[in-house]
Image 1: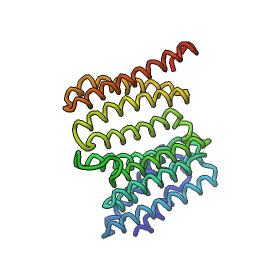
Image 2: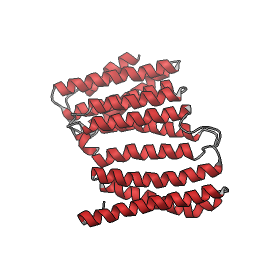
Image 3: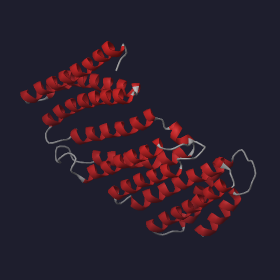
Image 4: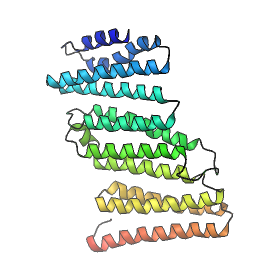
Length: 300
């Protein structure tokens, strides 16, 4: 049934008519037809297999459209294939979260590789969706841990976050070397922001429930300040002004957090350490801005 529906659907989509709704049809028709085909599948594996089969048809359609020189229709088929296989992996591996995150991240990298030379921006959606799902699942796994009952960066959830980070990093590197529209749409600021933002969030999730409430509070304050300074340094090194501003915002947030929350830290040494850490990082950030103004007459 699934095979027959796939043949009929993609034969209909292959008709050379300039219908205004062709793009929406190419994206939605496979999912509508799959609702019929997957309903007849009894197991999770069979249902995922149906989605994977249709993703294969979409990839073949993408190659045929590329051969015929129709970049628009080819990009739509590639996007459909990316979304279909994303659903297949998500549904198949849902009971095994670590494998699901790793598979979705790997598929995001694969789609980024496939769309490097595409002349339409739509396939970038096919890159973003599996990577966002992988990152979101990893964060959800980190949030499900019992606070103050784990060692940071050593749990199975941490491995999921690592897999998502590696996938994001490789996909970003692949897009950076691309020559197509997706690579131009995902500019350097967007690529850096996605990876750095996720890494900072991962670290926050690890430290928020680390060991004891007092130590976790101290580590978070110092962590935000360090991330702020690090973002300023990276933004200055790479010439990305938005990253520098984000780093300054993080450093200021750490200072506000220290003023508001450090008084809740019971241990005096940790409380003083929190104030001291923020002070040192803010002084370093201020020095960077002052040095840049003196040397170049501009902010760092």
